[in-house]
Amino acid sequence: MASSMNTSHRHLRHPDFYTNSATFLVDNVIFRVPREPLEAESTVFRDMFLLPQASDSALEGLDDEKPVVLEGIEKSDFEQLLKILLHRKYGTNPGLPLNDEEWVAVLKLSTMWEFDGLRKAAIDTLSVSKITAITKLVAAKQYNIDEWLLPALLALAQRPEPISVEEAHRIGLETTVKLASVREKLKIEITTDTTPCSFKPGRVHQYESMRLGVGERDPEAEKLDFTPMIRTAFGL
Image 1 (cartoon, rainbow, N blue to C red):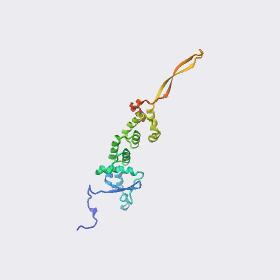
Image 2: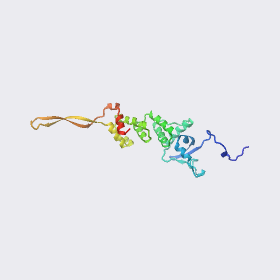
Image 3: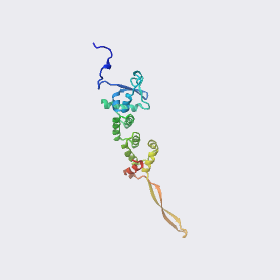
Image 4: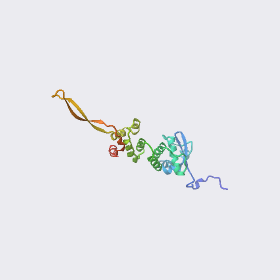
């Protein structure tokens, strides 16, 4: 009969069927997930797990009593990231992200934690979705997605509606002003004025003058290519 003495330190760990797990505290909720996909796909988590710690009794992430605390992360966002991550690793399908908001959460955390594969999946999915131009512009600036900038700005320049106050808060004052310079046009108006004729009483003198006026937005603007003006205004 084999000895009951613990000799596990003498044995090799199976490369596929020995799984380490990690415990995280996110938004006051405990998560316990496999470490391997986190280490494999994120340089941030890989480096975190490699950091030396004082002793086994003080190791963070081994159990519910001492989890790794992920400050400032929302539970729902972390859930979406894990759904995609575990699906890619194990083929499970625990309610994959379905809507744009959930994919934006994946984009946010995958960018923050350098999950390059998950980030690409989120960008590819959102690129063909019906995400609004404002949301796409905000995401492009926040998460450094250069290929989204010009299409989002062009869509906002072409649309009939002006930038709303709420939208201006989201994209920032500088971007709003630059967009306005691309969207709005000034037109020259020719007016005919009259003045009394000083040397012929009862008669008036007519003359034409020019002035700048704010032009009504032409419906055909939706078909115009504002790309050159956008590139100039935004330095693209």
